[in-house]
Image (cartoon, rainbow, N blue to C red; front, side, top):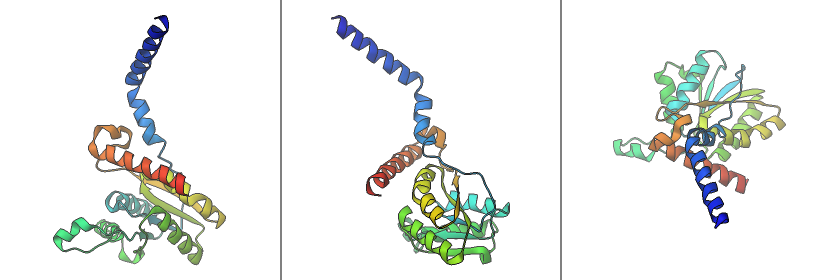
Length: 203
């Protein structure tokens, strides 16, 4: 009887602690995934596909502040929702359109309309950096994506003699540090953790 009482008490205390500290516990699921570097001047800014609005906004700001002389949009994923309006476009096209709307000159934008995953985009960017003799680049992605970007890109780029600066664009649809308060946040954190485990397993 005494053992059962101790077990029930332990479960109650643990549950109470989890409830009281639920916010920092839940927040840690996001903070683990956020990996950003200090800014330095670079040869180019790469926008990874998957969020042309938020990522494009950050890339435009970085360009305007003089951190790099060109912006390179990657990504070959189509946007089927736009077919409703008879618009056939890719995620990289959306990023470019956003940059142009913000006054970024078309002459400094480079389009690479290929790559349907982080791994594929990494290979494309590795080759581009090698061909153009880049020594430092800035990669812009979503904040919750930066851990996986770091894992996929950094070691390979270092072997090529390229310094990597990762910057994460904040979502305009939810607060990353309070992701559990919105459906968009729940979906984003769930997807990114699933992809993170998948990359650990496969690569």
